[in-house]
Image (cartoon, rainbow, N blue to C red):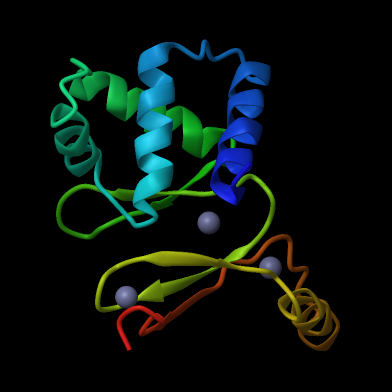
Length: 143
Ligand SMILES: [Zn+2]
Ligand SMILES: [Zn+2]
Ligand SMILES: [Zn+2]
């Protein structure tokens, strides 16, 4: 089983736990969303799905992305102008390396960010509850 398939399975389990029915359409949405590995707006994802002629409505895409975000399986990036975009995320904590050329997002393990957050907590007497890190650069395939 690929890492992405394993991630999808854990997402399905998470969705089922939160009372969300995993219909065939929802599974298609999640599979396509996971495969893209980039930030997409609901409209963009809907356009991709329309090419497959599965008859999935835009409202279903919005709802599914919303539920995915709520269960921690999608990261939402608000935009000042226009729609927010979403990225498929495995529920386990991790970070992102974003390619500024092709837009591909690779997962990065947390590594030393955890101890950095701990030292910040001590130095600044600021209780870090969670953190988010994104690295921007050029990926292997584009360089
Ligand atoms: Zn992620
Ligand atoms: Zn790239
Ligand atoms: Zn981290």
